[in-house]
Image: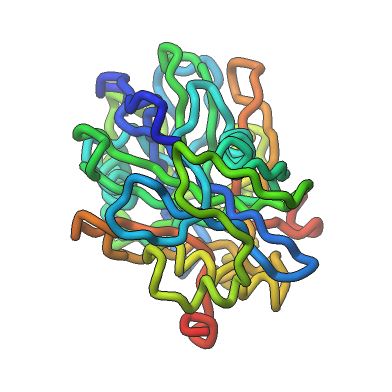
Length: 180
Length: 180
């Protein structure tokens, strides 16, 4: 409807699952300021006006020192009233990235540990969060069977009225179905 | 990072693509207050604390009078500084719904027209927006080849620290890959 007030209700966080396809290892961190030392994907909040993939690449670099590039969107979480969000809702997106560099130089302000871990080990360990575990299983499935099984691809399309462009994410549409 | 201020930067809009699988027709509207009369899926802004699927079902009912149920998430769009958002960014999600009722009783405050249209016709027409056209092609692909080709399924998982639950959307993970 157009009868609701326009105001921002969500913060957007993005994590980057950087998978090295040459050895099946994924880049994981443990946050410094959490009680439970759970392995997670590096990530953080989007800056205003920042695209999802840009946030993922920036946060991965800031936290771990690893340069990476955006490949796809893997998962979206919506959560309401989570601790730290001050009553706002939270949209959290996990992207698949490919590494461009491999040497870890992690941020000691934010992280306690950082390493390249076998994605199968991350999928099995109890020392992680439920969402990280689930996305590790998705990554493992994609690594074994093809990433087309798990990826949402990104495309830029023109906005209807403004002449600007936006980013659209969905399952790959086969060429034959693009012009029905 | 945890060094950024926590504030909401995005409004979240949700549209519902209600597809009647018995005849391949989808519910579309034309907004009253737009210059170009483009066919679109009914939808609108999320209320604070409202889940994506709930917004889609509510907005479809408010605009068209049709009752429907959530099936899957199809597509995510991120857009910055679009007209009407006052500098905020916008996350727009399109869900696939199944109709529970079929009689249209549309809201004349918001809509000029509302009808059940063949999804193939919506995929072909020029009287629509680029995103609606793309999602119509995805729907047509799913209708013909199986919705597992296009759907992101939703699952509730426990949050790591709060004991609350959140909604996670991703590609269906085959049973054999859930416990690697």
